[in-house]
Image (cartoon, rainbow, N blue to C red; front, side):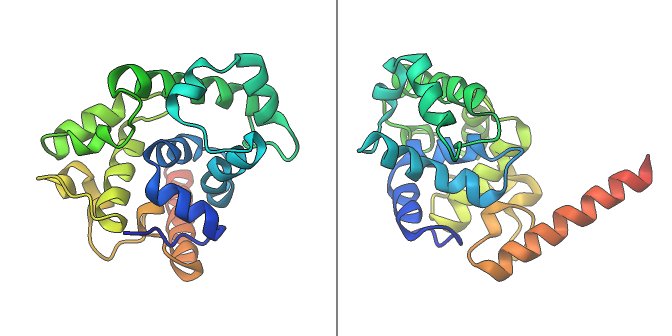
Length: 190
C-alpha cells in the first residue's frame, strides 16, 4: 500500500517503502507542521544525495549530521536536538532490529507488543506509539492482532484525530480542526 499524505509525492513514496524514513518522520512530528515532519526524511535524502539507512545514520559524525539538519531550511524547528535524536533512533534500529526498521512491526506478535516496541524509541511516547500503530493499520495495511486496541482511540475507523487519518487536504483540515478543539477544551478546563 502507498501513503497519500498531502506532501511531496516523492516523500510519500519514500515513507511508504522505507520503514526507517517512516519512523524518522513520526519522530520529527512534534512542534512543527505535519508537512514539515513528513517531508523531512525525503529532504534529508536530497541533502545527502542518497537515501540513508539506519546503519549509516547510526555511525554518522554527530556534528556533521547536526549541520545537515540545520542547513536552511532546517529539517526541524530544533535541528541539532532532532539530529541527535534521529541518530539515537538509528542506533536502536541498527542494534535491535539489524538495521531493518520494518522489523519493529513485522516481527511484533500483536498490537500490544508493537506498542511496547514503539514506546521504547526516542521521541515516541504513549500517544505517538498509538498514532504510529493507527497509521500502519489504517494506511499501510499492517494490522497485527489487536492493533486497533493498541492504537487506542486513534485506531477508530472514520476518525480524524491524527496523521493516521490524513490522506488529503480535507482530512488534514479535519484533523487540525479536531486538535484545535482539544486545545480549546484543555484551555477552558484550566
